[in-house]
Length: 243
Ligand SMILES: Nc1ncnc2c1ncn2[C@@H]1O[C@H](COP(=O)(O)OP(=O)(O)OP(=O)(O)O)[C@@H](O)[C@H]1O
Image 1 (cartoon, protein in one colour):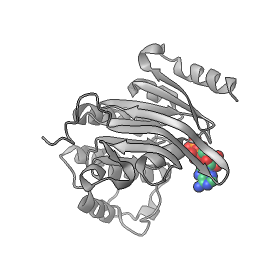
Image 2: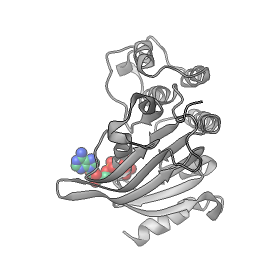
Image 3: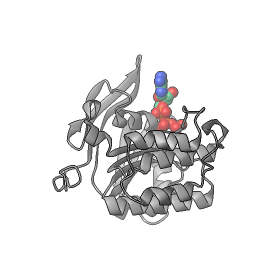
């Protein structure tokens, strides 16, 4: 087993240290630090415009912060080698592009870069139940979100960054996806950061809850410090206090 499969104990798979991001004169993220350890799903909560998507895109390396450092498996995210890049997955808030391709063509194309690691991809593709002959532009919003999830997870990455991945899924698809995600995290000891406004879902599967507001990290609550069903109330109280 390689070091990437079995990183040093207690070494976070993703480390983000003191990052800040501005657009022009507007500060979007301020001094954000976080760690994603193996085998944990961490929730990212925040009101609209808090900076969740900006943070997630910085963590993928797609957007460069103005300040601070981000490492995935010990390497600067802006210079990830292929072995580490292949161990990452990202579901954007809105999946766009590749609209002219058919679903099976896109899956084949991506499989060339990110080969499927085992039979888990079959479970994912069964869950997504997409018509392989349909063009991406012909998919509904929920179907496009399913496709984005399949593309991000079929190679079973150790680091998963999920930006509101269930916002357009129907209740059954959402529940089944959360079970598949939980299974993936347990089997691969993956580290996941997941943003969502559906707090009840997060309470089922997350071990920590981060609260981002106006670009600042206000809280990092371990699940054991929260009573069942309490997270949303605590979140609302905290964000009201500082508004
Ligand atoms: N490319 C950009 N240029 C300028 N401002 C931007 C850009 N991208 C995002 N912003 C601003 O950054 C702030 C945070 O946006 P972001 O999309 O990260 O929030 P969010 O927490 O994901 O919100 P939501 O829950 O609505 O998806 C917003 O005020 C937004 O207008």
